[in-house]
Length: 99
Image (cartoon, rainbow, N blue to C red; front, side):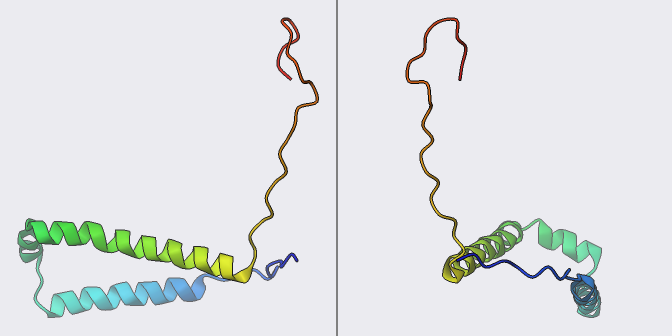
């Protein structure tokens, strides 16, 4: 059975406000904690920090993809397998082109 999504347009205003507020709070927390560009540059030169900066977003991305795949599969919205297409012409002969 086909389950269609809602035709109501979703607004991203709430997400934009929340993400802007989160970034602003994170920036303020970093400044209050005393992180300056010089200390941030020193921290960024360490190998553990470089690995963390690469692996944390990658891990979040993989978890998000797995979550979406599980959500779609559990909802039962997987498409049916397409039937095998068979050509009407069985044999090819020179000069007739592809078909």
